[in-house]
Length: 238
Image 1 (cartoon, rainbow, N blue to C red):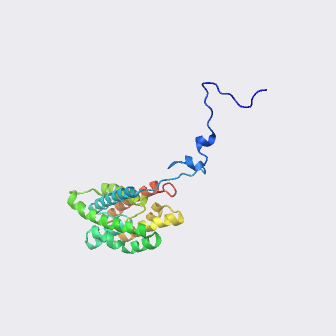
Image 2: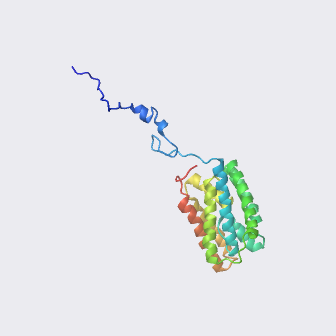
Image 3: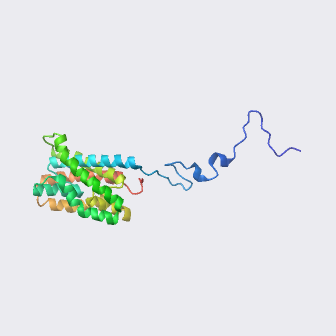
């Protein structure tokens, strides 16, 4: 009679139990940012330093975009566009207008997006106003072509808005509204932002030269393209 127990030769290694290789609990082998047993990806949220650096980049990119657009005599969408258009109509500098126009939108953020989101948006709004005011002293630019101001300024601004959104903040203004619409109704933030911007440009067309309005539209497309391409619902969390 042969024994039912398999004998191992000298070079053989006994096979480890499956529970020892994979873990008795499937969740034990689920690493950060890897699929779990259900096939869903577990993502690690941003820590405090991630948020600080992300907000810093968002402020810097946004301020550079606003500064370039202002030097080109252009406007854009969102709170930045409201500040730039108000600046051209009143003669005031755009820097203090950003936090002033933002007040009703910050109230909306508190009610719809939560105190944490709104608090960061207040900090961001004031910081952007300060950096825009400082850029004139830190960066000496004699003139900017309208085409470059539109494309570069719009792209910088879009990148700044994207950085802020990725770290649960915004410049405020219609940006906070579009992020709320995306979370509530799954409508892309870039598309809803473009709808708000069309209303703003309809107002601008009555007071600005047509060529400036056309260049401004190009800059707004460049700005919103950053959100349409890189901020899709469900693609990024954390």
